[in-house]
Image 1 (cartoon, rainbow, N blue to C red):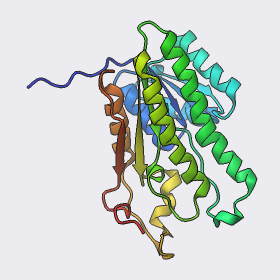
Image 2: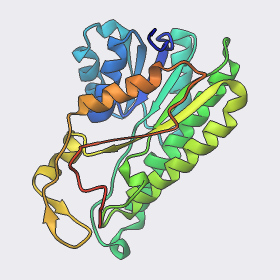
Image 3: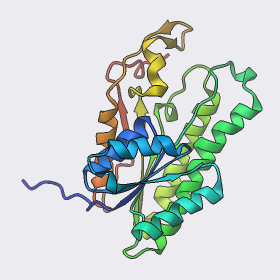
Image 4: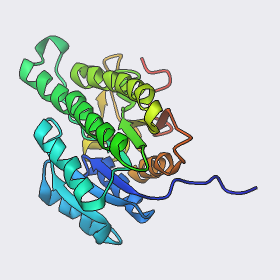
Amino acid sequence: MSDTPSFPPGVAVVTGAGSGIGRAAALALADRGWSVVLAGRRADALAQTRDLASDPARLHVQATDVSDRDQVEALFDGTVVRFGRVDLLFNNAGTGAPPVPLEDLSLEDWRRVVDVNLTGAFLCLQAAFRRMKAQDPQGGRIINNGSISAQVPRPRSVAYTATKHAMTGLTRQASLDGRAYNIACGQIDIGNAATEMTARMSRGVLQADGSVAREPTMDVGAVAEAVAYMAGLPLGANVQFMTVMATAMPFIGRG
């Protein structure tokens, strides 16, 4: 039996690439031959990601606030100028809010999470669509980071949960609207990858029944492998939704 053919590595844009899942995914893509544009707010963190690569020349740093439309346009314009096209967007940038009761969340914290997680994801998706439709050959792939919170909430996470549920709507709409232009869009929902953001899991986090419990985590490399697999499919095939999680985390049966 022959191996499943993969999409030839091309040009990828990874947002939130300065740490965690974004960093791991960017390095995995570069190892597979992709040219990768690293986007995030902190140029120093992006440079650290680049310097960790086995071939740093494959990675290019472009500091970007994804909630700023002009900066997002500059990111994609710069990618096309440097590499000629955009074949992949890993829409990964995200942030959270303080874990306070729903009625106590400030409007400022709500707007900050919406601006990054939802508006930022939309702006990047929209910019990628424009370039992928216009380039020759036409098309490309978008992978949205939905998080397991796109499926079920944690206590005291209304802003994060709402934006990640909305990410599923963005994924479905982009998958439909991209069909005519050879643009594939899928979503990866991740649970408890071991990153800076999930360090609190080992100390104990609030559960649905009001208790506090430590939760298992998984190596972030497993997520990077999953993203690389999705990215490597031929454009005629798509992983619409994938869930990758620490096996023993309290997700199935949560609550």
